[in-house]
Image 1 (cartoon, each protein chain N blue to C red):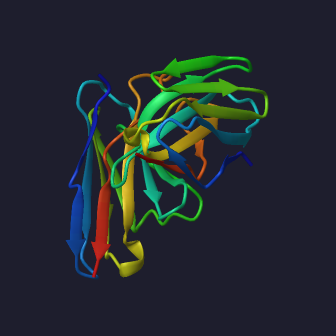
Image 2 (image 1 turned 90 degrees about the vertical axis):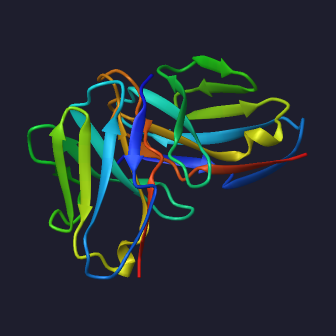
Length: 115
Length: 109
């Protein structure tokens, strides 16, 4: 149980275009999902908390207009990287938990490369 | 500010050579200390949650322990398939947690 699916696993896009990443909870409902960014040899950095039916909460230093988050249903959150630039290239991971007292379960991540 | 520090950064073991990974934390009001395994190009896979000092949990060749300041992940007689990056995380809640930078473990046959 507690499976989180993320799509796509890899994406290459040109500078200036936008990319959408989907995160789905397959066997549970998630009112809250989390989006992380991971750099090589670095910790997972929390970018934002996605809340179903309301606005996302962004961590300090994360541009909300660049990283658009939509939590359209109890099983789907999307992260859109707008006007992507090479510095946005990274590994993006989402997570969710079945209930408040459960640990986080993660998707398999999306490797974004902006050329 | 919550901090989680892991050591060593990398560890290379011979198959069967037991060792321990360290996770030091400074998290006020810690609700849970979590261990994850991450394979290259994948998301972290949940291993353990520890809630209070003195608690221990085991899974196959792995055992996690917790004190008031640190947690250890003991690996007994590791196999090559145990090679991965091991992450620990802690927080005041179960969801919004702070991650360490991980220990990259390589087990050589």
